[in-house]
Amino acid sequence: MDSPPIAPFWIAQIAAVTAAGGAGLARTLRARRVRPVAVLLPLLPLLVAPAGAIGAECIVRTIVHVAAHRPGLPALGGAMAYGALAAYAGAQAALAPRGLRWEALGDAVGPLACLVAFGRIGCLCAGCEPGVMGPLGLRHPVAIYEGAVALLGWWLAGRAERWLPARREARFAAFAAVYAIGRAAIEVLRDPGPLTGGGVTIAQHLSAATLFGLALALLGSGGRERPRP
Image (tube, rainbow, N blue to C red; front, side, top):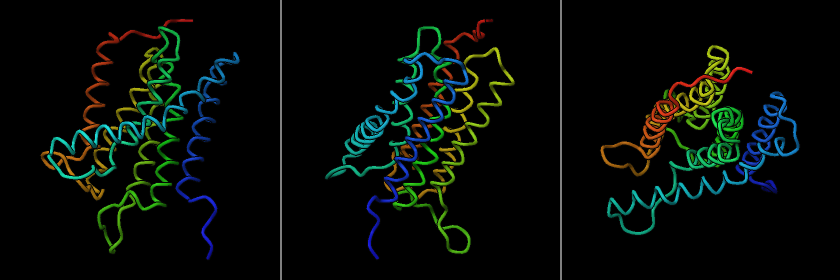
């Protein structure tokens, strides 16, 4: 049987970028930020997401590899998702007007969830996200679990925005916390490959760093409420 002209992995990545762009545009239009530049803003951060994924992967893996005094080149895996998400969220915040960065990060929640959910389908197809053996001799589909966690975070972010309408940081904080906690938990079911000190995976370290950084950002925001229109 002939192989498909485009590997399923790349089909999923194209779908991830397309879905993320669509989610960002829908959020922008729903918020009535319909000026031409504002409509393009959700698309611009997508340009830096691949660079963030590759850059974070190379930097983190190299640091761990050198610190452990391992010979040869470092193996990849564990930091790509966080690199892509951090690059997208960072670009979204950097492009936002001053004083509206929490809102901009909230607008990024849907695209971030789409990047993870669709992107991890590609990882599943490529076999690059193996899980440990589960019941009935089947491996846990950890890539699907991670995508489900991202979608759950998106849904809970929407609920947090409704429950705390005056808190500008509620939407993004809910998503980031759910994803970081869920990702750390899923690592227990993932075939970890090389570990860092103490048997903790790179993704678990990054999850802890995300939660710590989120807590600092929330403390730094001083509990400021969304300004009344």
